[in-house]
Length: 68
Image (cartoon, rainbow, N blue to C red; front, side, top):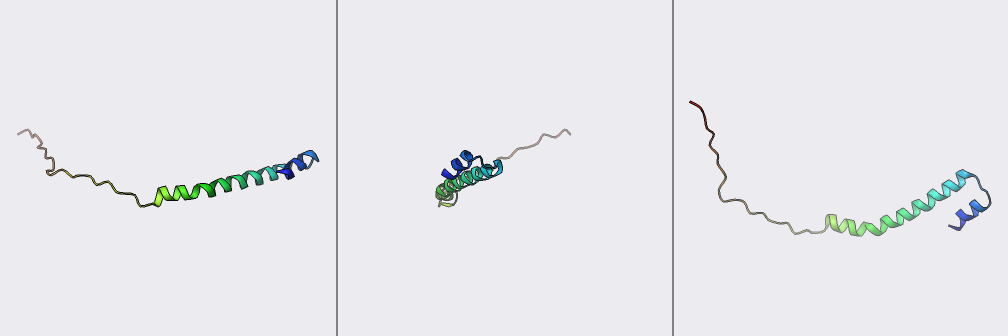
């Protein structure tokens, strides 16, 4: 972060400042993603108890009315 301030204070090229900002943001986002990975993987792949649904004993039947 101090490098970024030094670049701004010494009137470094705008592309250098921009590149440094991108590097800092990328590092912060990578750190945040690494922190969240265990929670996401546990929620996605952890042994989840499956909820059993009861099937009806009889299947519904419907009669179609036909004109004769």
